[in-house]
Image 1 (cartoon, one colour):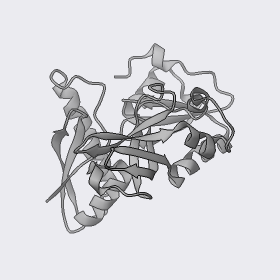
Image 2: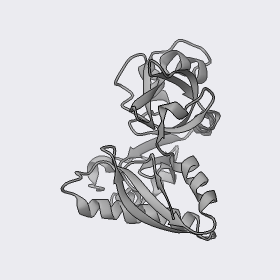
Image 3: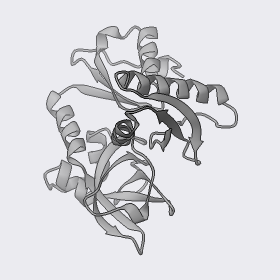
Image 4: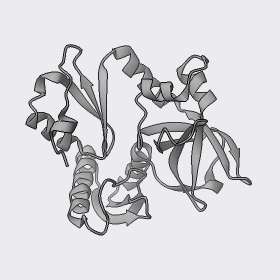
Length: 243
């Protein structure tokens, strides 16, 4: 049996108090993964949480476990060491608070021993997302809907292991995702810390069926709700308790 620490987190709950919510999230995670890989010879189980970041640990066994491991790392990310990094390596990451600093956005890529975030510099954001045009960082974050815990793929662009400095650029997969959102022209409402079924429950409760087209899942607890252009603006975040 293999086990894997996922980069995706359990958050918005109090670890010492909300044990039932941890069980709720863990069951939802195992159900999601099991359904995705139902055609493979592998069984999953939830092990527990890793570190203060509350990263779920998943165990799995079966003849396809090596294939499954690689796919889980690709889709959910995992933890790693600074010594294992190299320029050009693609990692799954999660944004820290986009408003934290003015010179860029820090990305949590699960780097441990020592614990270190990766910096997506402001000038790199200008080059990749604004065709090189100098744009205030806050405007870029607002235009592309950056939010805390937003899942992205990044490519290591600069690495100074001795001084523990790591910079990145957005990987092609993430750039393509952003471009598709812009080209589609739909308004997107992002949610974090909630399961997709919790979002659907809120939509049902507030009777906003007519307002959305689909709900994508960039991460386990992150959603992108695509709204119809002619919709009335859904205010179900304020109208309904979705947790």
